[in-house]
Length: 64
Image (tube, rainbow, N blue to C red; front, side, top):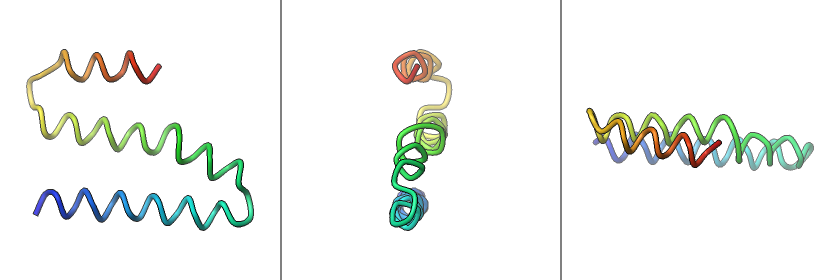
């Protein structure tokens, strides 16, 4: 069930970016690359690896 929720949210983000990309491609690229997707991945990592702060720290350093 958790996987299906992740899949649904990820698909919604991709469709959202594709719809924006039709009229404002640079904005769609910015949304797809930076804050929204990075936050989603960080949330997935936190939920899947509770207590593994090294993994989350390494992800944040890599994202910056």
